[in-house]
Length: 489
Ligand code: FAD
Ligand code: SF4
Ligand code: SF4
Image: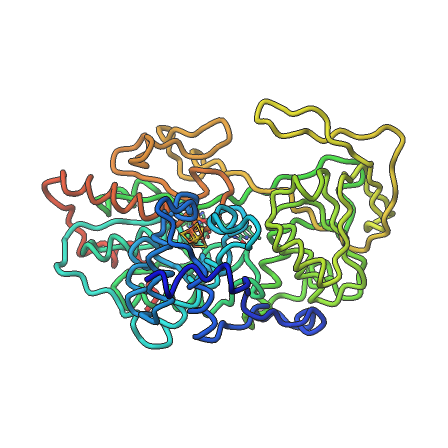
């Protein structure tokens, strides 16, 4: 085995080739080319097969990374896929968009001096190959169970839960207010990070596995939570967080200051070929504009890179902390810089200037003060140090909070935290309502896809335990008719 592995001493780290920045600025295609098969195996062989693999400890799914790297290095791709998919319902998606520098790869022991194993790129390669070779098939459970589970939300948490429950033979129905399956995977995260057919084929596989999707259904408006509890033996809330945080500064109400998510949704829909109403088209399009994006997380990075692709004349990102203390992935900042984005670190907007629409942003210079209770240094303005940036479009990307589900679902007994996220009883992910579970961003607050997958899988295990304890399933047969909801097939 050692002959084939431990190659990190002689073989340099290599990512799949990245398309040149001038080319990728002109389209929304993924920026990395696929690994050639032998390259993926070669890179996997750099792993030193640690006895205590820190990569695995720091992967939220505790993926068995050393094992699938060894199988990949040996060319045993189908077995590598079997090991990889045993802990992860969507490895090719995590391989593309996890911030690996903060998770598995950032904790790889050969990181120091030799550059980590390219774990994410190999993970993506294994599952892309599995799709190409037809190893990923619809789920055929060993037995069909009568009990049914209703899932609110077709994002990664809901989909991961549905996949695991269907494998156990439960009848699964997913309700989502969007028209397409995938949640933020489809409408938040841009195509250049995650191509949409990668997401849609996951949804299609679930449809072919017998999961029923009721799209364009807003729970709370079109059907109540109470009705879903009547209809199903258990319910999962996986609704994500969509309440955008807003700036409070003079001039913030001027025209052409837009929130990040509607901007990204519109760009994603355009890329998906949807016909969109002409209203707002210029407000949400960066072409020939001087764009200022405010924020330092993944959403801000997606906005700056979308704006460059739309043909902005300049794109500047304002962030109140420095490069080392930003929440977004370092790899994404590097990609953005290559594509021509300018970062103004330690800068926070003070006021927006203009008559009817914004024409400039006045920003104060910040410094990092003492650490707060969490150990993070808080930014504070340096008196009398501000500068102005000309702007035709300002995008606010300051993060998201949970919507008020107690009101939306008319569920006064659903306990929530002071941040509005749903309270669950630890690892069981059960809420204060009997048989109602919750997973993903709506429990954690805005987080990562890999954590949503982990929660969805854990919720499936908890729902399975809960349903095993229940004696009789609820009668469901006529309900699909009576609720008159459209099913996607
Ligand atoms: P979501 O993906 O938000 O899905 C929730 C679903 O519930 C949606 O489809 C929504 O329509 C539906 N829903 C909500 N309310 C209702 C209702 N009342 N009735 C019916 N349906 C409802 N994470 C990463 O790991 N890497 C990244 O690169 C990354 N980039 C990101 C970029 C952007 C722009 C954003 C916004 C987030 C990004 N994230 C990233 C975070 C990641 O997308 C989320 O953590 C993850 O999608 C959460 O999954 P979820 O299933 O909990 O919720
Ligand atoms: Fe790394 Fe994410 Fe894959 Fe885990 S799921 S191994 S953190 S890329
Ligand atoms: Fe291999 Fe790095 Fe994980 Fe060790 S920490 S098992 S070298 S990938």
